[in-house]
Amino acid sequence: MVDSAQKASMEVNNWAIDFAVSQRAVWIKAGGEITQPTEADRAQMMKLMAPIGAEITARKPEEKAMFELLLKTAKRVQ
Image 1 (cartoon, rainbow, N blue to C red):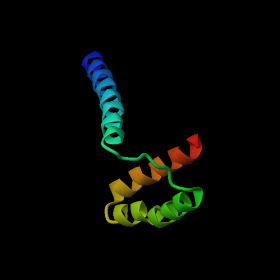
Image 2 (image 1 turned 135 degrees about the vertical axis):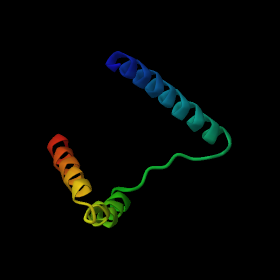
Image 3 (image 1 turned 90 degrees about the horizontal axis):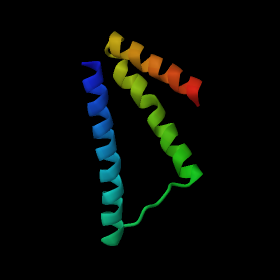
C-alpha cells in the first residue's frame, strides 16, 4: 500500500508541475502577466494574514494543536 501511494503521489506531483507550467504559458500567450509583490506588499499581506490561523483553530483544541505544531515546524525550517 505504501509503495502504491508513493507511486501515485509522484505521478500526481509530476502531472501538477507539468500542468502549472503549461497553464503559465497559456496565461502569458493570452496576454496575462506574471508579477511579484514588492517586499512591502508581501510584509503587509503577511501581517494581515498572520492572526487568521490562530483565530480559526482556537475553536477546536485538536486543530489548534496541529496549527501550533505546523507553526513550530515552519519556524524551525526557515
